[in-house]
Picture 1: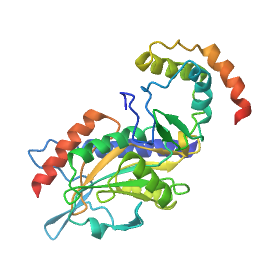
Picture 2 (picture 1 turned 180 degrees about the horizontal axis):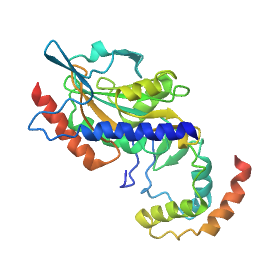
Picture 3 (picture 1 turned 90 degrees about the horizontal axis):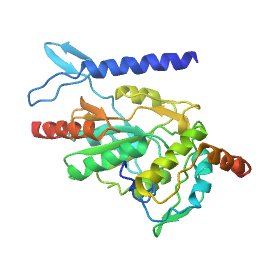
Picture 4 (picture 1 turned 135 degrees about the vertical axis):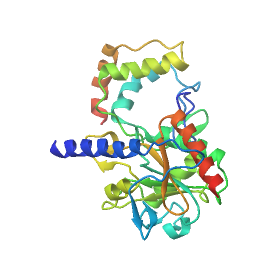
Length: 95
Length: 206
């Protein structure tokens, strides 16, 4: 799992090609509040609900994103704690 | 808060039991847990009898598993923390020991609310679990803490924990007679490698 390949059709891979710049905008809200939508990554459907991790701070969320970017998507720009906080403001209405 | 202190003490206590059982052994696995001498015979700790229903709605009982060693763990399908890591390691074990007649896997869900049979079935299918070898079962509310303790594990509901339950990610090896013979940290690949060697030793016992 530390290699980012995911697990069957249960957990999507983090090292796949389908992570783009706009993923950064959704990332903070997904980590904090979870996800119940169906997502498609690399032709595979993932529909297992993901629990949120409400205890993670904005700095921790930024660290996770930057770890993923650094490990598998070096072309993505790093995410700052400030941007994460701005993104979290916008997802308050979603939950 | 008080209950959390008690839980923490319990965890340390359980860790102590496990550590004290880590003896050197020469080609034979130790027996873990309390033992009694009855009429000159040593009676090793035995997992109490059980009866569950697995992901395919098949009854899984201690009688059915009699004579076949199994690897036990505690998890829940929506667990956002350690379960994915542990399941990945268990899949690795299943690849190495792929004969259902030789070794079984028993994953007990502690989410007595959500992890019904259809949910367990979907989970099993999604990660490619072989239903002949690997059983997923749901514990009920009264069983969670008690059964976890029977396997020297800790599991309990905790609304502060991610996903609603706190539990340890230990894998437990039970031999064909219900005795606990080895354990490891299921989140740690190196610990699981050593555990796989323990499984080999047990299978060599015949």
